[in-house]
Length: 82
Image (cartoon, rainbow, N blue to C red):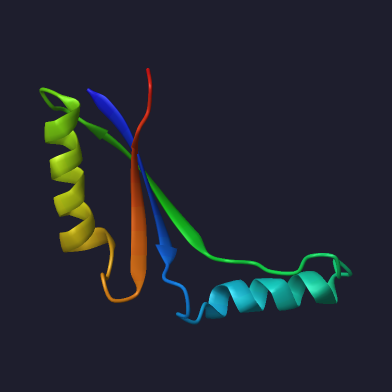
């Protein structure tokens, strides 16, 4: 079994309304020192596989087919040491 962490971010230049609203709310709460807020999604997956290369290949497919939109997202795959 492999524990995999997938981090998904918006590409540079893609608007992030949730991050902008969070920043606005933080400022309204008095946290003026916060200069930026960005939305990042993380998926923790537990995958049965023979080796890391097979698991990475499968997770690449998962990202491309389900978790991300390649037009607006970038993603990082990390196999957790365990």
